[in-house]
Image 1 (tube, rainbow, N blue to C red):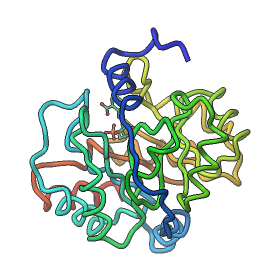
Image 2: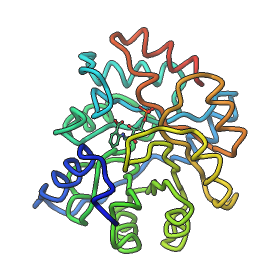
Image 3: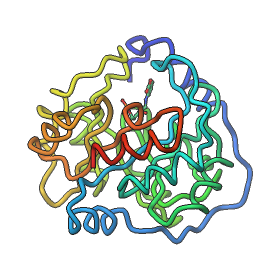
Length: 250
Ligand SMILES: O=C(O)c1ccccc1NCC(=O)[C@H](O)[C@H](O)COP(=O)(O)O
């Protein structure tokens, strides 16, 4: 990876991720099935949506002060099939404690959204799914296997056709295509449209970032998205607003 191409905020996120250590015990998790949750949503007419508890981010103005557990419960009430919870503390206002509280409060699968770059970081907190970002993980095969050995399902995030090829070669069965270019932090829904055809039908495909309207949802579904990952467009200042934002997109 050529790190000189990364936006300064992303380089800072990556430096912080590399510096984070964890010396707890090796985890063994019993995950709630992500694909079953997507199938259940489809079966009752909801768009399979992973709604993200996202207090802030480098591209967000200010911080949402809403309680993360109340936000998570509102997302589920609005029809979210699964949740994503940021655990990155320095740039996204997340924490492992928040993920634990959310997972305790809901019964849908919960994705740990962080910048995991080394095996021991997998043991920081239990979750049903972990995110591995192809661009930031050198040994994708090794980290994917290490995550699965612990029981985690793995969402491998990509942004280019080459990264999809790497993800598939590593054995990924859930592949995300991020519409946000982590080099420039620009969002373009055409990314999913041009990259997703590289993902075979047997692999679950998730469209990530920049999805904010029902037209965007239709567009990503028409381009082959089995599920969508949405943060900013569902987050709001009150649980009621979050529930309605989520309902609108599902
Ligand atoms: O969201 C950011 O500002 C951001 C900046 C730098 C690296 C990653 C970032 N976001 C991570 C994500 O993947 C999104 O939180 C997620 O896909 C939801 O995106 P959105 O619906 O556009 O909030």
